[in-house]
Each structure stands twice: as structure tokens, then as C-alpha cells.
Image (tube, rainbow, N blue to C red; front, side, top):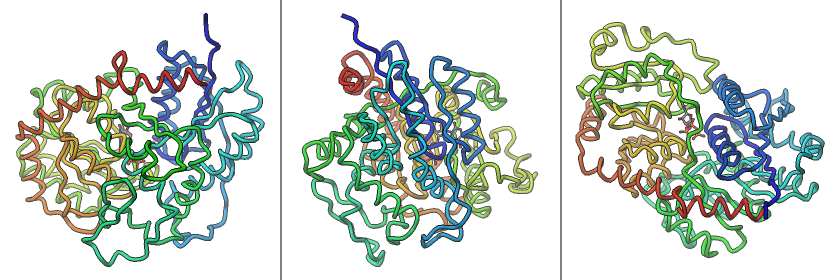
Length: 460
Ligand code: BUP
């Protein structure tokens, strides 16, 4: 007997790091394997140019997915938060999206071919979307865009009192979980009325109302954390955590970028890729030290540089930033790109042998998929806990003493040494391939993530 088609609305929030996993999940749900009708809510206007570009490319290559543009209200005055004068534009957008959720009501209520079976929404809108899902009597699943390790911490955030960072070496003990070093907690967590902290804390209080938490992770990678959460050892009231990752890349392969052609000319596993995600800009001084490190390492490199949090604000010229003599001296070995490369395709390229990464969770899951060893350089937010997962899995090494963004100036000499070690470490390379194998197994027939995803759809 043929089952009725499930219709899922996917609701991402702001920033590429939050959009990419939703695009991938949308493509997976609409694929012949899952056969869902999918509506993707496209928040308008996006903060960055990268989000607009990704949305356009995605809908062009996935015509079967229904696009629902959602025009949000953007407040004109600064809000009541500690950092209100200059709030991070992505955090401010989390708030704006949340406070616009009521406007989604008529849009979702009118989706009727077939009627909606469920909403899969970003964690950062959990509170408001929970109310809406209730009004519409539609089951709600919350999507975590981070590691299970970080997500379990934020689930506990409403019960945590974090007052001072004074004891740098100590850690906090959360029920059922491995202890979390104080130094790995995002620094804003120590300021209760910081926009990020207040928003996360508020939304964490609504997790218990969801039917499940969808994790872009897999059992093998984070088995202890997932088991602790699912046996009620962390918090008794949490819904099941459902590991359905790593989400599959979903882009049409393009060979457009000149950097891909450049990679074609490099020996296998000889190039280190350096990228710190879509919203992390190193200081100019740190950029110069990193350049120095890459040059000293003598390794081939592909380096994507950003100098601003939001891509639209970029004005720096590479020559001014690095000096024309650096570019001239390294041109036989390295390629420096400004702003954006197709990272999925870069990581999949046989010439890439290592990845210097900030450990944004998408980057980590991509490295896992492609079996690429990481030099973890976490810089803010969830990234230190993601780096911990990376290291524990054998996917990478983490220089703990390099610290958060701006905390230390990491010298080129040390960076260069670590890059050489990364590229020469045969044991790490073998371990990273093992992670790739486990990631692949999660999605083969009967694999852990595939089973969980098909069960979710079956139950819709
Ligand atoms: Br930059 C960049 N090309 O040039 P993360 C990013 N990406 O394809 P972030 C590109 O964006 P959060 C580029 O493959 C990954 O899927 C990359 O997500 C892609 O980091 C995504 O790794 C970036 O999670 O987000 O952007 O810092 O802070 O939310 O983790």
C-alpha cells in the first residue's frame, strides 16, 4: 500500500552556517529515498550576499522544492541587550526572525498540497515557532546546526549560572555529560544579557515542547553524548535526539572556479585548505602571521580570506592586505581567494590533504564526509566544543593554547610548524579516513542515520 506523501516545511534562521544544513536536509527529504513534499522558508532579506546566492542556486537546481519567501520585520531601534549598541548582525537577525514568526501563520496555514505534516525549524526560533506549531496543530522538530556536544550544553543553559571566567582552568560538570572546560564556553555565556546568551537561553526553554531534536551528526561520531541525552541522564524532559547526519552535500557540481582548475594541477593530498567559515574575520595582523606560517611551511595551500563579519562589507584588497611580494613569492605554491569558494567541491578534490578550520559544525561534518584531517583553530561560539569532538574522533588536532579570536596573536612560526605536522601526519590521515568510512556507513542501507531519518518520515 502506498503511503501518503508527507509535507515538511523547513525553517532556517540567519547566516550561511544555519542555512546550509537546511538546504541539505531539504534536498535529502525531497530525494527519491525520502519522497517528501518540501517547502523551504526563505527568510527575506538575508544578512549576507552568500545567503542570497546559495538560496538562488538551490532553488534553481531543485525545482521540485517549494519556495516560500518570508519577509520579516526588521526593528529600527537598538534593543535592550548589553551589546545593543553594536549587536552582531547575525544574532540581531535571530531576534528579528523570531519576532516575525507570527507572520508565518497565514502562509503555513494555506499550504495545502498536501497539508503540512511537520515543521523542521532552527533551534534559534524554537520559542516562537513552538507557539505557531501549537496553533496550527502541526508537529515540530527542532534542527540543531551544531554538534550534539554543544547542543547538550545549550539545552542545560537555562539551569546554569555562569558568573565569572576567573577560574580559567576549571570545568563545569553537567549531569550525564563529560565535563566542559570553562575555557571552552562561548565568552558571551558569562554575560546573561548579551544578545546571544539571552536568545539561546530563552529558546532552550522550549526544547521540551518539540517532538524531536534533529542532529547533523551520527551515532559513531558522538555516541556518548547522544546516549546520555537519550537516556534522560542530561535532562529528563528533553525530546529524543535524532542523529541523521552528516547531511549530504546537495550542490550541482560546477567546475567554474579558477581555484578548482588550479587544484586540478596539484598532486594528490598535497594542498592544505585554509578557511574560517562565513562570518569569522581574523585581524589583519593575524592574517599576516598566517600568511607567514603558510609560506614557512613550504606546503601548497588554498586560502580563503575574509576581513569582515558580513561579506557585503568587504572592501580590502588582497595586495594591500598581504603585500604584493607575499603573493609573488608564494604564487607557485599557493592560491589566495577573497570571500567565497565552493568549499564542498574544494574538500572533495583529491589534491586537498588537510584543512585548517575554525570548526564551524558544517565544516567539521564536511571534513568527516571527505575524510580530511583538520588543524582545529576554533575562534568563537560552539567551535571549541566542536574541536573537542573533532579531536576525540581522530579527525584532527587542536592547538588549545591558540585561544579565542583576538585572545592571542598566534605567530607564523608556530602556525607553519603545525601545518607541516598536519600534512605529514600519516596516522592522523588514516584516522580521518576511518571517520569518512563511518560517516558513509551511517547513510548506507540500514545505516544508523538513514534508519532514523526514514523512521521520522514514516511517523509523520
Ligand atoms: Br566562507 C565559505 N564557501 O567560501 P560553518 C563557506 N562555505 O562553501 P560558519 C563555502 O558555508 P557558523 C565559503 O562549506 C559550510 O558548509 C561551508 O558553515 C560553506 O561555519 C558553510 O562551517 C559554513 O558552520 O557558520 O559560516 O562560521 O558560525 O554558524 O558555524
